[in-house]
View 1 (cartoon, rainbow, N blue to C red):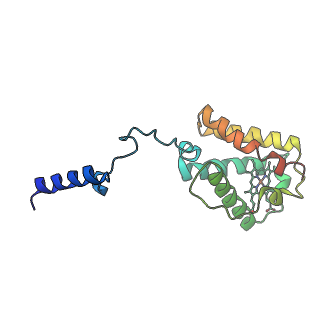
View 2 (view 1 turned 45 degrees about the horizontal axis):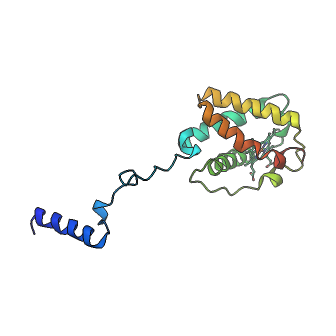
View 3 (view 1 turned 180 degrees about the horizontal axis):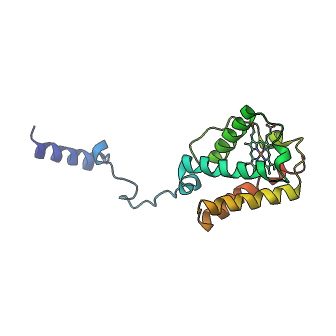
Amino acid sequence: MNKKFLATMLLAFAVITGVAPYAMAASPQAMNAPAAAASLYTRLGGYDALVAVTKDFIGRLATDPQLAKFFTGLNDTSKARVEAHVIDFLCVATGGPCIYTGQDMKTAHTGLHITDADWNTSAAHLTETLNKFKVPQKEQSEVMAAISGLKGDIVGR
Ligand code: HEM
C-alpha cells in the first residue's frame, strides 16, 4: 500500500465515521476548545519547587523563637515525616498529582494549642518564603487563600 493511498483511506475513515484515527486526533486547542487552566501546583513550578518552598517554610517555623516550641519534641524521623506530609498535603491542595497519607488537619494539630498570634507569625513566614522564591502575586494570593481555609482546623485546638 503506498503512502498516498493510506492517507486517503485514513481521511475517508475519519470523514465517514466522524472518528479521527489516533494519529490524526486533534488537540483540544486545535478543536478550538479552551485549554485547561494550569493548576496552582504547575504554576508554582511543580514538585521540586514545592519541596524547596516547604523546606524553607518549615525551617523558618522551627527556628522562630515564638514557634520553635512546637517542633522541639519531634525527633529527626518525626521531622522528616512531617516535612514529607506537608509537601504531599500542599501538593494535593494545589491540584498536584500526589497522594496525602497523613492525618487530617484537625487531628494533626489538636493538642498543640496554636494561637491566632502563632498563625499570623506563620503566615508572615510563608509570605517571606514565597517572596524568596519569587512566586508571583497572583499565585501567592491563591496559596494564602487555600491556607486560610485551614485555619479553623489548626488554630485553637
Ligand atoms: C499553613 C498551614 C499548615 C498546614 C498545611 C500544616 C500541615 C501539616 C501537616 C500535613 C502535618 C503532618 C501530619 C502528619 O504527619 O500526619 C502537620 C503537622 C504539624 N504541624 Fe502543621 N500545618 C500548618 C500550620 C501549622 C502551624 C501554624 C504550626 C505551628 C506553628 C504547625 C505545627 C505542626 C506540628 C508541630 C506538627 C507535628 C505534629 C506531630 O506529628 O506531632 N502547623 N502540619
